[in-house]
Length: 152
Image (cartoon, rainbow, N blue to C red; front, side):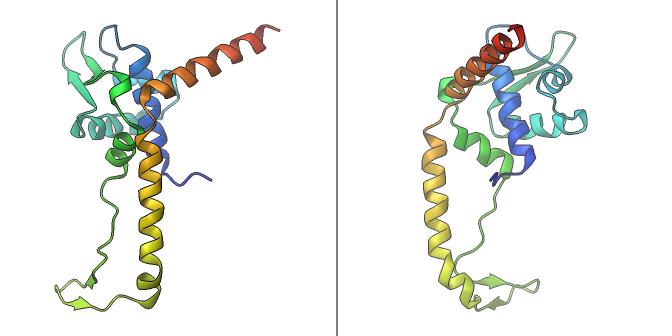
């Protein structure tokens, strides 16, 4: 079960691609999209979100493109997922309508809000313990296994 929108997966894979080439010149968005099979209509939006979150920086010009702002081991999966998802938390103290009037929360929201908060905290804890470096290592291992299987 994938709880995250596809844009999160695209953001992760774009970041892994940048990590693969961290010691080279910047990568253009279209190159990242091609290598990771990310639709070109999404790549600029994804890179813009990552830039706003401070995960990547961009350089203009013929040799321009994107690079990571930190080493892959310093970028947590949580920071990446949160930057791609944006703010999704609902107000736990009540619901406000379009006129700014506060309404009482539905009983189901009151009943389940504590559980959903615990689930989110557990999820963030797990994602905080996974770095882009560890994903890069897994990616390269899978890539090697695929190459070996292809040659057999």
